[in-house]
Amino acid sequence: MNKILSKLGLTPKKPKIKPGKSEIHLPFSRSGDDKRSHDRIQPDSQAKKTMVGIQADRPLGDHPTKSSSGDPLSCPECQYPLRVQPSKSSPCPNCGFLGSRGNKEDTVYDPGKTVAVSSLDTTNDPGIQEFKFKLIEESSNSEIKIESEDPEVILNRSHLDPNNMSISGEQHVLIKFRLNKIFIEDASSNGSTFIQVKNIMMIQPGIRLILGNKICLFNLLDPTLKSPDADKATRKFGGFDLNVQEGASGFALVDEKSGKRIEFIEQHVIVNRANLDTGNNTISGSRHAEFHFENGCWYLKDLSSTGATFVQVKTEYQLENKMKLVIGNKVFRFEYDF
Image (cartoon, rainbow, N blue to C red):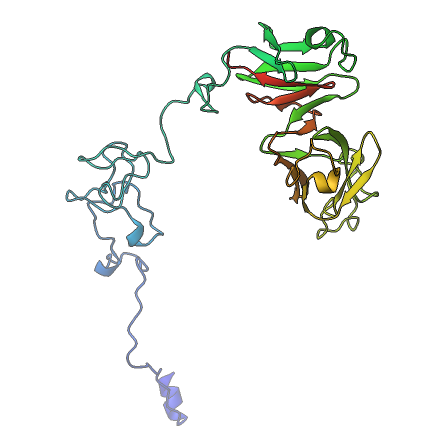
């Protein structure tokens, strides 16, 4: 071919090779070729050992530190992988081991046995050991002692005052003994069971209150607002305003005997003799009770010196020692330490 090209006056072109480029060798690319040293996998004495606690895709700074023997550090107590030796400043996060010179600290993980429910003490208060109590009539200081082996006791007119028609003849109050505590629940037909306000108690619309010797009905001012149990249907979107708290507009106290209605438009109100019943000495002259609205609910707190603020028993209430009760038209003091 070259002779033919030379006779025609043509010179064959030589292939150009760019300088600086070396031949590329792929491992085991030619048949019978010896394995090149740079393609061989170097022997490693640790290759067959499982690397405890080391993840290949994490930086070396996160790996457990090796001890002087070359093995990763681990807790002497529970063998949990560690980065530093356990000490008082850096206990084992798994078992709380503090090192040879320390003890253990409580940690989130507790490998101990599950504690039986019967051994738990949720109140740290031994409470009442026996179901026995007494009701002391305030006016005559007479005592009514009750002891029962049953967890529930029903009291009625025959137990409390045989001739008092304001107390139900069959069942007026239900006293329960549960979890070393005593509870009261109204069982009367006329709802004439009241419990003395202790600390702060939440009150609902439609409940009756006793302030001094006045019985008042507690209602919200907004006449269109329904009670919490009046409508169970889910509201449609747009049917409520997130910025408006229902019941925050105020409340009214309606005297059950005279029907007189007293309205309060504030969210924090202190009632006394002047704004409830001028001249009524059973109501404190300066501060008798406090009403305040918080988180969508109304709360009541007694401020009187005589403790003459009561709430109608609608649900189950726990009875505290020396707490007063109004049953019918009689005032009793509840006591259990005898």
